[in-house]
Length: 125
Image (cartoon, rainbow, N blue to C red; front, side, top):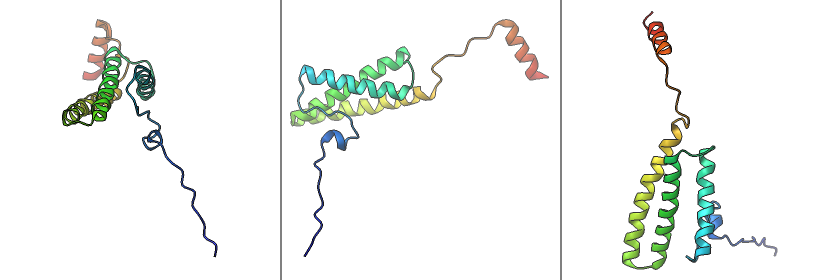
């Protein structure tokens, strides 16, 4: 009577969330680790240096996610309401960041008068 016994590996919250750091405590040290992890992940998505607007969005996203997790950890009705509001704002800002990724990061150089006339005359010909 031989049975195969499957080895179950205990997974952590970090493994379940695809490698994203989820704090268990909300100390200063945990904040710095969380901030570094999330900022690195958002910057990897950009693939280059962020514009000022993108940098501000990333900073706000990190702070909103931290606030939502901290409010959820409180385990109170008020905490749940705050977490829901933080998540709603987080989703909106994440959408803004995704839309900014679709736009070119470098603005095209404005045309001077001669280039403008040449392009206009070329389009009408």
